[in-house]
Every structure is written in C-alpha cells, then in structure tokens.
Image (cartoon, rainbow, N blue to C red; front, side):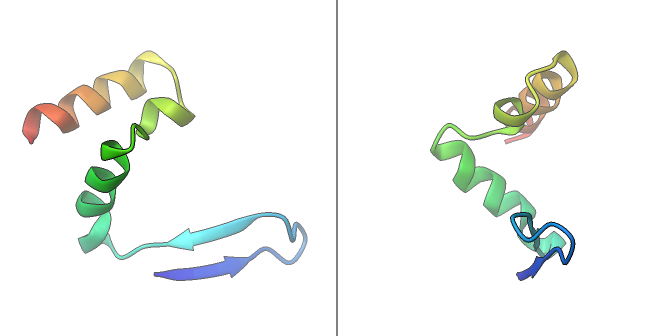
Length: 56
C-alpha cells in the first residue's frame, strides 16, 4: 500500500492498494458496515454491493 499527499491540496490523501488485496479489504470493511453505498448511496452502488455479496 502506498500513501501520497496532494501538493496543491494537503488535506487530501490518496491511498493506492495492490489489486490483489482489494477483495480482502472490501470484506474487512464490509464486516464493519462500510461498503460502496456508504460513500455513493445511489442505485448503481447498491447493485454492485448486492452483486459483491452474492458472489461471496
């Protein structure tokens, strides 16, 4: 994982995670009730979360 600060906006942080870790990280966040609908509460996000949970 790599963390970088934006030069023009020091209050923003970009976190780059290896693609191989995304499924594990999503599962961990889901355990705590954090998923895509927390950030993007639209119908498309809800459908992606349902598909993610359905695939197991």
